Length: 112
Length: 113
Image 1 (spheres, each protein chain N blue to C red):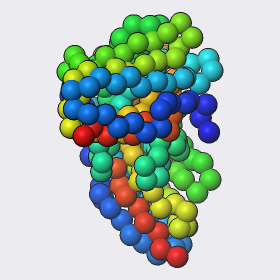
Image 2 (image 1 turned 60 degrees about the vertical axis):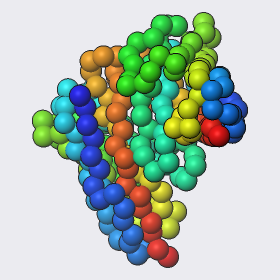
Image 3 (image 1 turned 180 degrees about the vertical axis):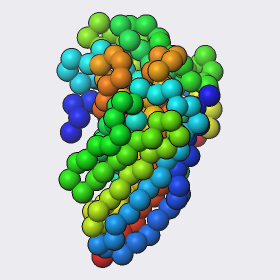
Image 4 (image 1 turned 90 degrees about the vertical axis):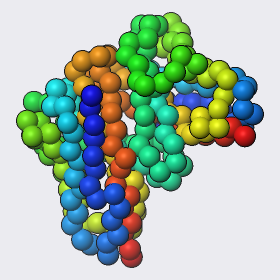
């Protein structure tokens, strides 16, 4: 196990709703990245947080937002859910810089 | 913009074969490259991390090489076993724009007993 935890494990939401996913980083890690993985595809980078500020963002609309807390845990918020948001959402923690990333088990989001 | 391609997309082999999985990336300005394993519906497990200054890394039956200048990495699996069946993902981390990590679509491996 990596020490990175995510909650909830599974989630079902209706189109138009809002969702919050949570991630607890491995002890000592100050950087968290979020990824979206659609079925059959590789993970797509959403954004990265370092010292509570967004530092790098992929090609995702503003309705995808995040927070990082002083204890380095993190949230991913998605507003106005669309059917295409159905995916496995992964978070990864690391030390800032060119270091190894450790992934959590993911949250499976289904939008109906 | 970094683009990562993994070949082959899928592979089915009998137990005991030695395998080579290929990864190519378009932007050679990377800090490191990580190889991951993913079981169906699960998170990612890190297999090997190669820093940009390194040429290869080894862990047990796994060996990963990196040719940064040509934008290529290979993962070599020796004496494959049914338990190696999974999707293998290549992920270079860029050195600009906040150390973004871009993944390939992966190689789905099935090792037959």
